[in-house]
Length: 479
Length: 71
Image (cartoon, rainbow over all chains, first blue to last red; front, side, top):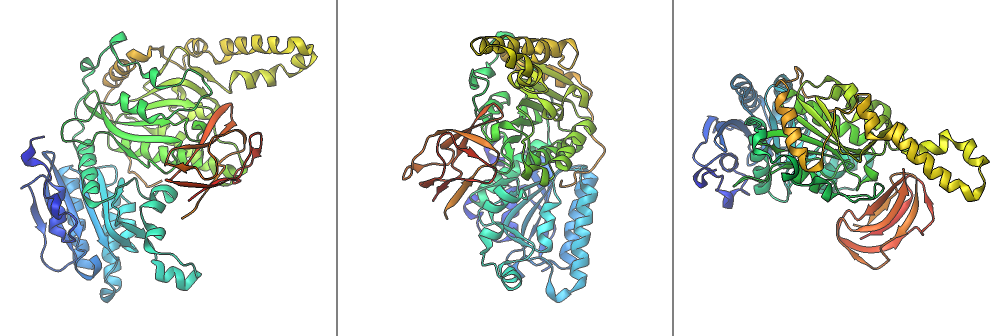
């Protein structure tokens, strides 16, 4: 990216002035206002991000706390409709207390029309929200309806503010604890990316607009093949039961950041962290990566992580972004809390999302894939474009040791104690070979090919490039 | 704000790594659990000092049980 097009008015980013905020989002000198200066509470503009066309709107935090009336809402609706017509991303910068009280129901009707426009655009163009100040009431649901929500340090999202909460429920809470980056980044899942300041929030929005708006082309030939490639397995422990952080593996799988870019963007990093969802470039093209993270909950899937992954899969499918699924999963998390939390209903969303997806989607089983979680992680049966596995991978209903304890309980019990462990070890080896080994999975066709860790990037790139480009014909409901 | 770190699943306490009074950073391992045939580290979610380790090696923790307090 040439330096002259960089967003560089950062010294004044923290100003609430809406035009200044737009200027900081776009490449320098590209801002063209579409609607402004009329006191409506909202501005809209077109401009460029990293040289690509983007529409943006901003609520005017300097005027009545950014409250929206019918006219401001019409500017936002027009901006979204324009983006859809031109098939380009739309970015919303939010700082708004919601509906203008003096306009009454007219303002509510306007905000409802903004929601309807967002849903019309859903799955057709990328919609990114940046929450720079309070986004309350109706303004809370605006960001929530879009594909990705970025929150700055001063951002707050809530339906009812601390005063109302206090008067109704008696709970004492401030705006930050009620709806700041901490609760929404970790507990609610409302926000995909939290940043310390406005500058980082806008930089993240620029990166995401570039990734989704200009996805690029896959060039597998640029990826080293065979033993020339990076050994991804070197980032994992040798012992199968040892936990590790999968994020460095994703970092090594994806392309390194290009000049002037932040590189891959992880979504929902602190919410449901046992599954990782990251947007980045791979062999030159935008992809979405979904990976189990053994560092958290042993990498088990649970209700929240299945829902997080399902929404990510549906977003990528609706916007035509291919998927890479990195599997190392011991199963679904057992527990009363999980069952009551709807692990069946919310887990079903992930099955539905993968089975429905038409974008190229390649699965890599690195260490293990057990049970129902094996199916959920883009298995052959759910229609994966290709399923690869490393030579030491295990695919099974459960781990071999657990299976032996169930299948050979009586035989083990009847064996003299001194011989029992030797028999157990032998049975585990047989079980691994017949039911869990990767060769058996290859034989029955649930793994297409066993590949070497060094050759992995190249093979995934070839598989993605060889699949027909397709895009799901559906919106991206905020699951 | 004191942060209570609770078990997210039924597990055996395999190793207690941190002690009361230790300064920890976000991501540091406090305790290692064993469940689902996996060693599962319980990590600090924020920087702070360990106020309490509520489990001993060999304990069985249920979902929701207190493991540690970091403030």
